[in-house]
Image 1 (cartoon, rainbow, N blue to C red):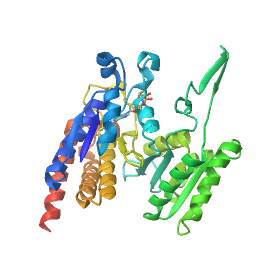
Image 2: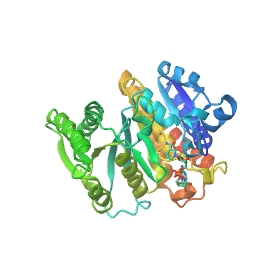
Image 3: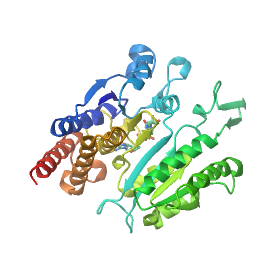
Image 4: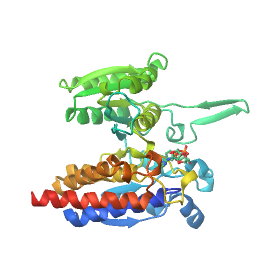
Length: 361
Ligand code: NAD
């Protein structure tokens, strides 16, 4: 399996290095045949090549089996004309990574929730309120005068249908419930279209329950009754916000994995941003990117019928959970004292033990 690795900005290089260490051990122990190819994006490639997203990177993506994308500091980028492309958005649109899959599970002792949370948010990834990806030409945001600004929101039947299908497929293997989150009481046309497509897909999955919920109520219910959610499907910005909320409720923004799913390619990407406030200090929690990389292995394994990749993903996930479960082996963001590398070393130790136990039992 060829993996293109794009470390990104801020804490990106630190958490990517920790993630690669985990993958290299999994590779050796499960005989996965992983090949890593590193490439610069973001502020580093901007300084060296004049763009945050070099053409060579874009050309390579269709030729590999998966991509690991570190967080990027796109808020600090210059305009596109000056080479400042948001790699995250560009990859999602160019390679039609239509579903952003974000699991969230609460951990005892870390979560502030009174009842357990174990859900997946499936977020539409290519349109919605994110106006920078909504136009063939020109920009979806404009200012007719200095005191008025407009932003174009786009919802299409095709994008709604395919993200809904991804959600129902996931729910089928879980607790068989999909909650479609919307604001169709106000944005009647666009969220009405989204719901129309979700209902059409739901009719093909009679074994899966469909619930429809308004986004503000969902935000509250995530806190009050998180156990009622299994798979949530929603439009781009609602999914972005709700998944951060769910992640934080589960213990920390640094804990949730995230996979951008396309027909042919998937991109593993941490849920959080580039955390410039702690970059370079070796204290970032690498869990989100490690779990995202495990999701990538699992996805590829299922696509190709390669059980070794699926097993390796499960072992990595179990090792991460074991490290997090122990208060003595946690990073600072979740009340521990360990830095990025030390935490990764504990994940590696658990990974080794899990594999030894599995092969000797
Ligand atoms: P952020 O997610 O980077 O940070 C929010 C807070 O969480 C900060 O206090 C940070 O220190 C902490 N945090 C985040 N990840 C952590 C981790 N792994 N371990 C420990 N603490 C962690 O959000 P922000 O500060 O709003 O954005 C910073 C930059 O990241 C901006 O340029 C923004 O545009 C960008 N961003 C990128 C992505 C992405 O690449 N997918 C997503 C969101 C934001």
